[in-house]
Length: 171
Image (cartoon, rainbow, N blue to C red; front, top):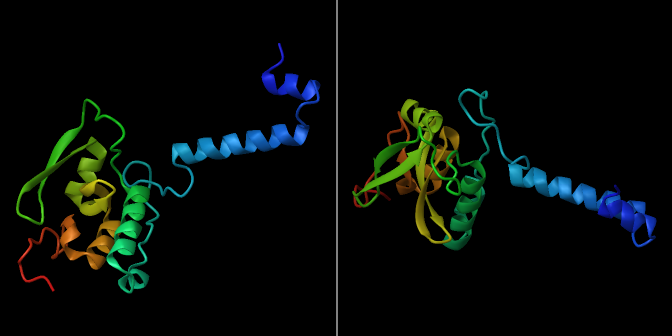
């Protein structure tokens, strides 16, 4: 049985080039949906991450809106937790202190929880489209966010500035 593309081509309604272009677009969309476009490899059992970097020096001269937008896009690209996916059976709650001194929490899969506990990843705050949010990111990404917004670096093992509270003498 012929598929729809073959039937349309046989009827002369589309060309072979149209079919090939549509298939390339479909493959590109599927790759982007899987995270293949622009995503870096995760730390842990799947090899060392190739850290993506935030353009901190360039962003220092920008306004807050541009900085927030750049950090949001960066965090969404490199984050290790997936907020769109329900937590698995083995997921664990990771508690941390927010900049206001309250207790925050993220439900993390065991590998991500381990990376945060061991220092291979950190927890950062960022301005999402819905307000302040938190995410687990690779350690270098956490350092980059903390360099631009020190109070947004919430957890990073071995980092002196992680977990600072509002009013603790920040610049």
